[in-house]
Length: 114
Image (cartoon, rainbow, N blue to C red):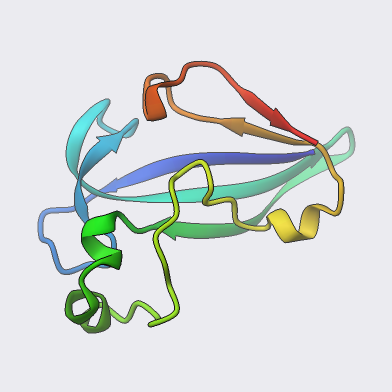
């Protein structure tokens, strides 16, 4: 099973790619941070982290100069956090579980994909 989960990295400045005031479970509130979505594979015999993707808010994807200064590829476009699913192309029909932080995206609980 693929498991998608996000985590935040608290930041003080605003030059690191993706930094914005946004909710993060790391502090449990809206904070200045980066948010990344991680993909892990789990089975009865083991588990492994297989991929990750930095979430870029619209304030980043809509500002080409800022993105360029931070090294964001020109091809990078906005995607919502639920649509940021790294490694999904590797799934090939493998069931997936998305575990959002409580209250993130106005949701609580889990979403399953298959």
